[in-house]
Length: 107
Image (tube, rainbow, N blue to C red; front, side):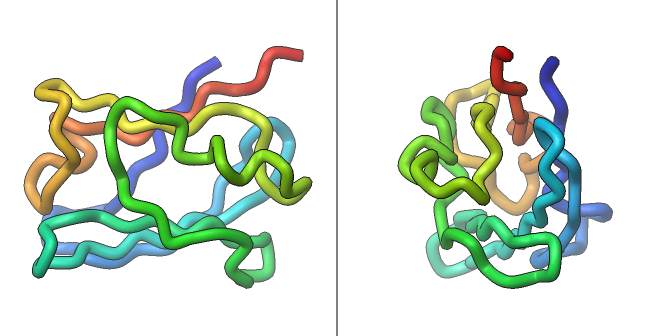
């Protein structure tokens, strides 16, 4: 199963934090937009709000969790940006033309 993780709740937001359950693990995501580089950044959080891993740029075409799989606190599935134009999401395209998707691990 694939789940969309929304980066923000309104078009004006430039930083958000949210918690979701992925493959039975409760984790948080912190997202922040850096206007200087026109990039979204992501941190993975434990269920009590501590940073597990990050920051990582939201970039299409690769598993954003891949380098963190050795950490048992990281969900085992794949997290990726699906972008219509294959470009990294900016302030306007995140959650619309570029979506953050989590694909559950095959068990």
